[in-house]
Image (tube, rainbow, N blue to C red):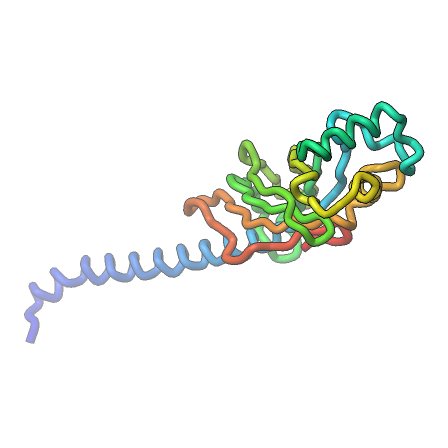
Length: 211
């Protein structure tokens, strides 16, 4: 049996254990809330602009007839050499709905890494990452992540003719171009008060709706 002195000695330790237990519970709740808020961050392809093939602007062209003879010669020569660089700017929209409403705490999020792979007509064409972190404030608003795309379309679509390649580029970057042929697979890493948090799985980003 413990005497009165022993009981007195145990009480501070009991209080310490109780404090640590409560701290652990509240910390776990805080971690859970942070993860829950992070999972609400959504993405979609907002736009793709400034398409150029071997330096030739595509945005003002509707059909193959809009390419002049010099441009066609330059493109054909590039295809024969197997060097046909296509560049454009892909704008990814990131939306943070954690504005403090709907039972969720206002949470500012920081995308520290954004490794991605880009697909054109379901074919992987290029991969990369953001150059610097992107801050997405918890205001229920969206932030645009600009990603410069550059790859050799002659190597990606070796089986295509000059006309086929130009028609494909016009579909995405011409006057009536659309981003519906583009798809991005990404695995974001976000900065949190508890350190960096990587998405457990890759996400698919398209233009029609947020993922």
